[in-house]
Length: 190
Image (cartoon, rainbow, N blue to C red; front, side):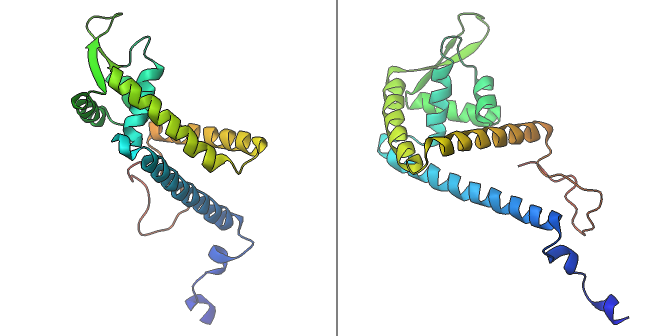
């Protein structure tokens, strides 16, 4: 009977339990990725803060510039940035106020409005790209070409996985064998 009163911690913390080790390793990897992303974002934002632009605005300008020939709708911008359309609407209103972008009628469909970078927005985008290049080179300069290719491949696979999970609203998965007073089922996606 004495054994029944002991908590069963061997299965959870034992070195032979692959699922626990794998789970711990995954959590540590995502935590490391988040910390790295935070530091990279801070380095980028600090490098072009004097231009009064942040990485969100930079990303928006870059997307709009990348698809300027056909015109970028707000819904397309929201989709590419992984943001809600209401968040993008607020962002675009502020960027219009700062004369970085304008909304114009689409040349292909006159019922639609598309986003276009202003001359001022284009100048700032080019300056930010230069700072972005300097910071990126400094951060990735310690990696050899093979490591950079591996990093790109791994990040692309992770981005694809996260995009699929986000679209399915399953970033937190429930397992049938989880016995917890607080199951993850029904938890909102990140």
